Image 1: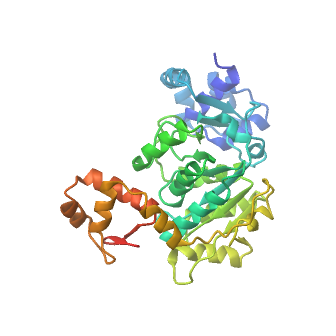
Image 2: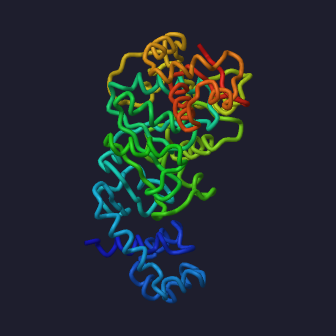
Image 3: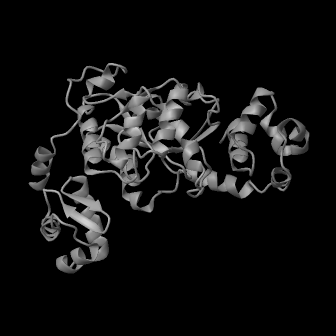
Length: 370
């Protein structure tokens, strides 16, 4: 059975136009959450409640949602943590505007584990992918948890390579915690849960990918972590928002340097100019953040060695697809026709080949990077 404060927090998290700021103001003014829910008119003056909020509470439109929550909580691995619970992460509670509620699926013990956030461009390069992989490899003997946002690009790679290297990982999502977004990350979402990882959100169950939710969730990514590593970022990028939030939270910001000719490196190079710590080897991070003793290794990967190793571990279909793709652009249609496989099969194999740095997605198709 849920405690009153937890149930009231759930109701208010689902109530329209009752955001985190109103919740914080209610706590600051010692307003009982139960009174807000049962007598919203009494709190209107202090909290400036909108008519839509008052009507929602008076008509008890939250009852169906409470039934949904109870059903969800009965499933193994699902939890709700409020800002008053002992499991609530200490480092997050220190933030101004800390989320008052966390919907969690998975291993909640990770919330208070030492964490590094890895974020970056949606449209990453092979260089960015290899750097992300090497970061996780070099941290594989540590007790660090890799935190990211389960978004396209570097976020996806951060979670995948963390799991590949037996690291724990937390995905902070900008949707309801029960929604795998983007849908292409459904298998990764399940893999995180199957490997004792954690998926969290401050948004109610069923919340879709609303555009303004993602910048808001970034403060949780940086807030949980000891530091934020930006692998690749364009000049204007959501990753830079996370880096800025980390600076405001007095967290360490690390940036991977890149080519001056690469658009995806512009943001990182700019961060370095502004004082972010340049990272060329893992010791650059460990000098600022104590995890445990890890040998200094170069982060900038030997791409040729990686590719040779990956090329020796291909399935029959992966080998067939790789032979179809040329060093020049090969369109997706041509790959499907030449391989005689279905669209879904080809897309899944191409994703695996990209993860192994053997092909690269470019405008118009794919190229063989061997």
